[in-house]
Picture 1 (tube, one colour):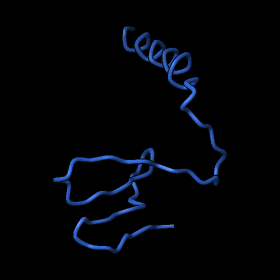
Picture 2 (spheres, one colour):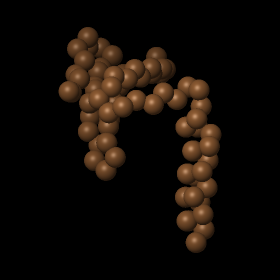
Picture 3 (cartoon, one colour):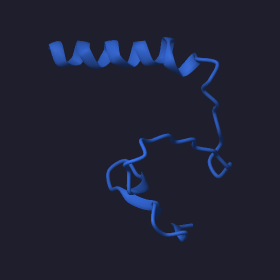
Length: 72
């Protein structure tokens, strides 16, 4: 029973706080988005994954190469 209450409390917290923050921008499916990333100088590569049940890599880049792999 406590797991159910934890899920309910989590959903209520997200609905009442984070999702109404002024920095949250809602987009329709297919609209463009901009993602801003920061990292330490020791990082050698970066990838962006999407998916809910099955992850799919949509962006990959290495620090030493100028080529970026972007999947449509």
